[in-house]
Length: 422
Image (tube, rainbow, N blue to C red; front, side):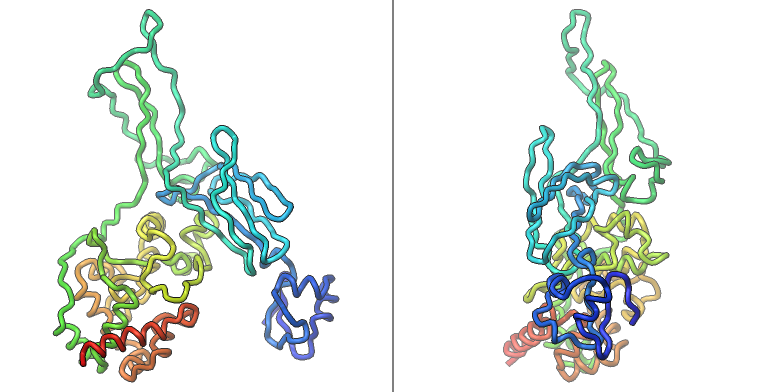
């Protein structure tokens, strides 16, 4: 493996002291930024960071409740003895700060309108550059105040009704934004709530607000058929496994297939969106909250795969859908069995749009997709039949299954169902 200026991969015969000397640093510094307890226990193939900037950066992304970037916000970031006043700029992202150690606490303060500061969060730097998304419970609207009209005597004009307000239609396709002049289609600079200044017939100022939230036109066709015991038996027969194995996967993956608005349960994955755009990572720089080469964070032990651990997935899906419909649908895990849209062909569908349409109809469609998906993967099918929980976890969720104990909780769910059978 080749080395970059910020990282080094050890080869046979390398020592930490020799690597430190050749890169004009010290053993203590390398141990500190890499969390190395014993400098004599480095193995060939192990990669270490050579510079703190590679592993101790902390970046804050500011978004409102609709996940629009909060632009040009003033913030103060404190860590150790450092205090930095920063602006979120056009993308809503503060410049990265570099901590001195992985255990340093970083505090974020945002400026109120009167200039005072309010602490909104604090995080520990830890090893590995970190992006922290800070979501406001409110929307940010950018408008302009207008003087109130006065009558001949100098008193404010009164208004008893608003029916005479002059409707002003906002432009359907504004070419540029006020921020940096980028085209409106490139979300991050030009999307989000828009304000249009108008007035009533009597001259009273009116600020109208519109929103660019995407219309999720695929959310239709809900029929609501739930999975019956006969459906489970037929599915188990098709795969060749026990009914309780399928039930265990359903419980741990998605639980209920739909929410209280009859929308299929989803989990939006920004790194999956990123790798399905063309070119790869096309929207990463403008939209790090919904497009990135890295997932948001590791799941904790005991968290279900279907839990929306990043906050509400639908607003993020809507923003991504504005940018690239196909990539956005592929970036979500869908329904009762949380099958990734990216794997729609394995689930028996030619296009991701056809797959999502089926996922929007019923839990019975979720089960059919699971049978196809499992049967398309010989290793997964064999693991389901033989109840090899680690293999099921690895094939269904990848190597990350160990991070949240997926194989164990899957086995526990199966044993619970099996006990009910007897």
